[in-house]
Amino acid sequence: MSSRSNARIVRFLLLALFLISCGYILSRGSTYGGPSGLNIKDGQKATEVANGPSKQGSGGKNSVSNEPVKPAAPAEDVSSSPKDSSKGSGLSSDSPTEKTSVDGKVKATFVTLARNSDLMSLLGSIRQVEDRFNRRYHYDWVFLNDEPFDEEFKAATSALVSGTTKYGLIPKEEWSFPEWISEEKAALTRENMKNIIYGASKSYRFMCRYESGFFWRHELMKDYEYYWRVEPDIQIYCDIDYDVFKFMKNNNKKYGFTITLPEYKDTIPTLWDTTKKFIEQNKQYVVPNNLLEWISDDNGKTYNGCHFWSNFEVASLDLWRSEAYRAYFDHLDHSGGFFYERWGDAPVHSIAAALFLQKDQVHFFNDVGYYHVPFHNCPISTETRLKKNCVCDPNADFTWKDYSCTAKFHTINNLPRPQGWEKFAG
Image (cartoon, rainbow, N blue to C red; front, side):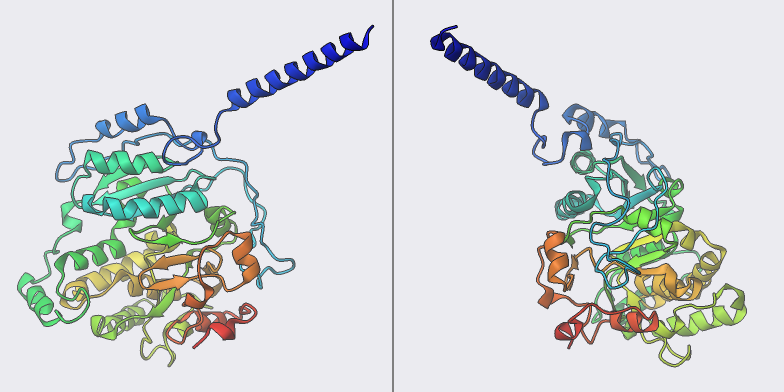
């Protein structure tokens, strides 16, 4: 065979290989689909997004919509433990260490209390959570509102969420004054508290009461074991490369947080006295090895105000569904403090978690990177920030500042602090 023939055969083979490669690439398509930037298998296409919301119920006074807008895609194969877990106990790492995972996803959901007018500020929060975490796991998302969600809200949020989206209406009786509250006295309270943040707001009080005592009772929440609360205008700074819900369940964690601080005392002048009365009558609910020392500097005589900032909250719904918490909320609710003062859901949740959970059932997420105006949570470890693609300034981290209660949380739980923490204190 001539050299010219051999050259022709080689060129033919090279051309064939090139064409086969092109065909393979075209058949695979792009990794990302559509303007959302989500993986194609993370969500359904525009027809399903558009058709889903039209199935929503009429949203009558006591109606609840349990109609999903789009089905969840199957979760990607992911590691059952964080990539950044340290050896040994894992306590010195900026990532938690999961125990051996059970097969399948946890029955968990994101939950957001929002109005139609919150849409634009909420979309950024959803995108952050999806890009940093949920695009790997496709957990559901429950949206709750005291008014029916409109079609724009449902279509826009559904387009971003990779799991099933559900939209619920809050019953009127859970977003109004209960019968034992004097509306005149409540109005006078708001007038006298107008110089305190949200002190003059009626709707803010409805929200705090609802988040304290009712969101976990909603029909859309009944099938879930865990939830992650998300609010508008938040940021997630770091990649979360492990299943947060699975970590919580497998390690018997019941409450997770990112930021702590003392509550503004003028909003809760009688909350602790009301709590002490409840405890005196229900001592059986207070568990041993609790976090009383974290919320009180004098063995329970007074409340120091320390609370978990509940705009980020990953928790077990069993905590709020428990006999202890139901009785506690009912006691608080009938005392009138949500309306005659300005009790927030954050101190209510925090006191309950501190008294009704063992201290090792509460977890500090120091590897998420979180922001809600005006506070930042940012891993101070350079190695962690690089591994998790964090986009935050450790100098802005609030964790070790004097006004934070997180250092005390570490001391009480005998948790080691990250190397160099003192450089970020003050």
